[in-house]
Length: 212
Image 1 (cartoon, rainbow, N blue to C red):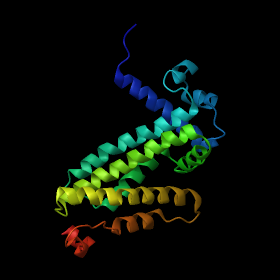
Image 2 (cartoon, helix red, strand yellow):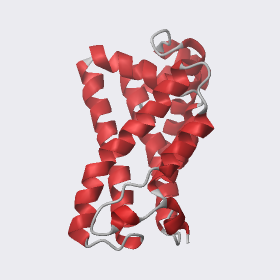
Image 3 (cartoon, rainbow, N blue to C red):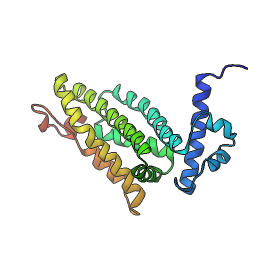
Image 4 (cartoon, one colour):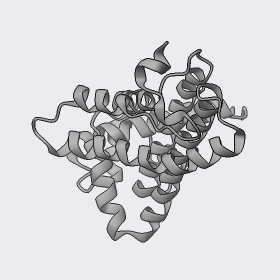
């Protein structure tokens, strides 16, 4: 039997995860069963369980893979001159996640499930740490490149503000899922206007200064 390549396995896992996300969007997380996911994917039960042991594992790993796809976009942003302001990264992350997940309400459903399932909560906490790490790394690079802060100051500022940006992302997800008249563009514009300045003289910088 020919050996299955890592690329093939990754493609199959993504195929299964995408099928699961379609089911969750259509039926809701709690109402979706593994049988639903198997039927949606068109694969055998053995093929599904060969990659994911349970629905809980499937959704948490699927979200992790979605985040991995966003990392490439953020790496590209870090290579731009000037780098996009940190608030623009919120737009990049949210646009990418909406494209992959379809409905961000899936995340709210999963958070509710995690609140009563400790194992799922522990896994999602790791996902949250990864999101915070994404913003930390970007902020640190932005402080170094755009604000010319010393490395130690850039690191401290990145640690200070990275959690704030996780909150901005979570706020977008919750409000877009719950509020009927949520204005996503206004929210993203507001996020883009926030400049997490730090260090001597940085407080005097404005969005217009950084766009010059």
